[in-house]
Length: 584
Image 1 (cartoon, helix red, strand yellow):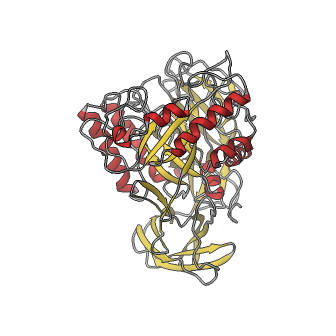
Image 2 (image 1 turned 45 degrees about the vertical axis):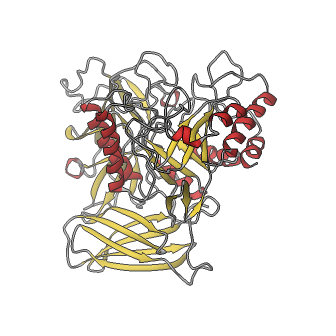
Image 3 (image 1 turned 90 degrees about the vertical axis):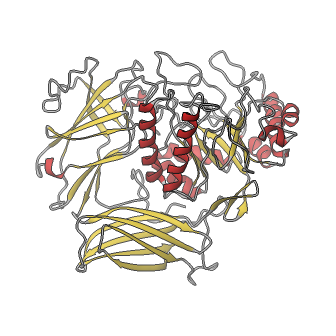
């Protein structure tokens, strides 16, 4: 059940204000292959020759353009008016995602620049806006085929190949305006403390601190007051811890889990001399992720993670969800197949997806989009964007694991190259400096350096062969044998430290087709599919030291036809048959 203050299609469900304006819709658009737009000052007089539907990339049918050819420079333009009643407010222009570099102008004046295709960003545009008039916003998006750019599954060649698909260029998530008082709440970091039955809030307040400023935090559940606390705003950064034990609840506290995804709602109110200047709605889940004796624990109890790999592609809109209903449909079908979580692969998903995972109790492994070269530029680009992502999505209770690297992509020589190993260690510890409460998987599936979980990718077709390979745990964890693709579990110089072991990619079974590929031999019938699916899934579950798995994958994606659903979300096998095998 959605939280009471949820607003459909609101682009940032964990930090909700009433006053906002959605700028999605029809924009003027132009390609700029000669990169002449800035020199010719298109930001002052925009010579748009096309229309595009934002937030869909021009490569998609949903954009109204649907041209898959790569264009490195694209421009957008639209006008907006400030709604009545916003006098004296600061005007903030938000972009949920633009791939890869965005430059922004308002009314011909340069506002700012952002780099990173998967992280959100904002600009205060108050000084550039003319109240009561039509205001023009112009965006130039710059993309490239560089392999130092964190791009995930976006191709860098002319045509699709392997498991890389049509690129995404420009605006691909919501653009919106927000109207705030000069003194307002800029952010709140919410950290549950399961063992203490408490929650910690780390607040950041924008504007000058003042003795007359007070910040009130009101926690409720199902409309019942749990706790309310106030704090004087004497500095920009504030913290408060609140105990959650309440006689208003039958069990005094409510824990978040896949079986019982209870969410506490929070209302933050900032007042100045008793006059309200800001009000923000949010939520959190009281839950704990930890590791003990080779097991992953949720709320101090072992949890067997039945994950499915999810690349978040749609046939007509690619990386952009076509609607909120489409997000919910995907999650409901994943649950109907007996999975309790997803590994969101090579993509940082729309916050609305994470919201519905919070609401429905779906575990999420959040994985970065990879670069494919290792050099100083790639290190800098990746590090900056990854830290933004961890901070921006920290509050979601559904996220239970961070995955910065996958299969040595961008760190191809990590097995023995000390510089690349040190890079992974640095990312591990930087992630922990922001979030010490979640496991971090470094180099999912292949040669791990420092990692809280050892994850292995193995597309073995038959359960008997899998059982034989994994019969001796020590042989796997000591690098005596390779688990698959001639890859060892650990990089040189690193030893197994008793971490949990999860098969984080397997399966990938495809029905016989000349239109695409799956892993291993393709199957001819539903009976053959289910026999192979059952064989390999049960072999993993029967291996007692393995504490979870991730099946490849939810849906077909372009030339990759190994999904349990087609690209347009039609089941290839009855969902209850998949569920029966997962829960057997």
